[in-house]
Amino acid sequence: MSNIIKYCIFTTIYNVGFTFSTGAVMQTFLIQVGFSPEQVYILNSLMQIMQVIMMLVLTFLSGKIKRVKMVASLSHLSLSLLTGVFLLGAINPELIKNGYVIAVFIVSAISYVGVGLSTILSYCLPYYTIDMKDYGKMTGISTAIAGGVSFLASLVYSLLLLKFSYMKTTATFFVIAIVCFILTSIVCASMREKTIEMNKENQGDNDVIAVFKNKNTYLLLIPNFTRGLSVGILNVIAAIAISKSILNETTSSYLNVILQIAAFAGNIFFAFAYKKYSSKNLLLLATLGVCISFPFSLELGVIGFFCCFTIASFFRFVFDTAIPVIITEIIPQEQIAPYTSIRMLIFTGAQAVATLLITPLEASIGYTGVLVFATVMLFICGIMYYAVAKCVKNQLANLIN
Image 1 (cartoon, rainbow, N blue to C red):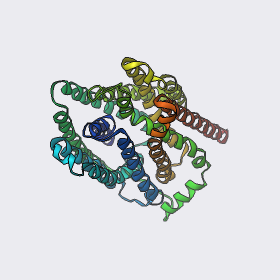
Image 2: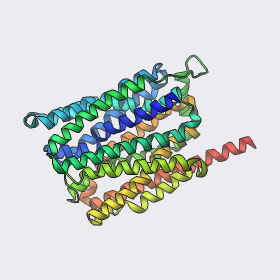
Image 3: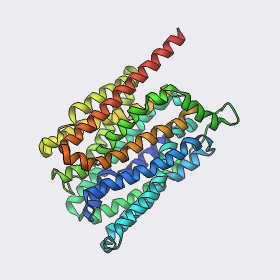
Image 4: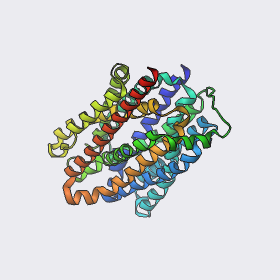
């Protein structure tokens, strides 16, 4: 119970820091200091590529990491370095004229190696610290709490932007983000590890081999890739909306408020519904919800865009929570570390490809076409994950019978 509480605390704190160092806040800040939308897209691709490199390494090494908790706690500090560079640019505009763009790219590359490590170990950490039968409900509740707190922080940020200068307000929240990352590391390190029984001496090597022999690894390659293409586009929606003149530096901050409301509502819904309706059925519902609400949101004006974005974000958080829960149901525990490295390698690599595709896609089919493309990719992912999960459930039922 102590670990569950700490897990909720560090998830919440990290989410607040992540909110104000990535996504809409980062994209708007970079555009305000002189980055072009194309440079923002390329930077996002670089971030994903650096994660891919780390995940490729972890495919073979993650199972050999002995002190998962301590390594995970240190990896949560990685974004504080990049946020510090953002902070320097916000408080000293003169830096922006002297190679600031290059500095952001270099530090982003370094920081996102750590983010790649943090991402993989975050999926492994629950196996070492909590009872996995509580994982689905705990994930929903902890993410909902994180969304609620981040919503309040985002609301305060948006209100302060109305009264104070953009750069001073944003610099203050960069400081808050750095503090959050430090506290996350401390709380994570304080969790107590439980004993996990592994079978053999060279378990790490055996697990990698087992993952590549598991047919579900290959069945999920395509949905993991298409999900990455979709998320890569959705992650830069602030820059897209600013480019379409739907949002500006003030109204783009509302996206964070909406995202956190959606995170809270979507994860509370998942936490209390998944045992009754199953994670795979909730995934199917979420897939349809995003596909109906999001593709043409840019054509509906500011109010219409915000309404569609709110609905789509709710279903996207249900979707994003259902995926890792489904994975714990279809991938054996001893394979989870190398499998997660492979899954996130494909997923993150596709995100890098997606942001590079935005400019040529926009030139040929427009930004609405880009969102339709992203929605189709998410639909493919949802349907394929649902099919694999249903197939595994039927196989287990046959074995029991």
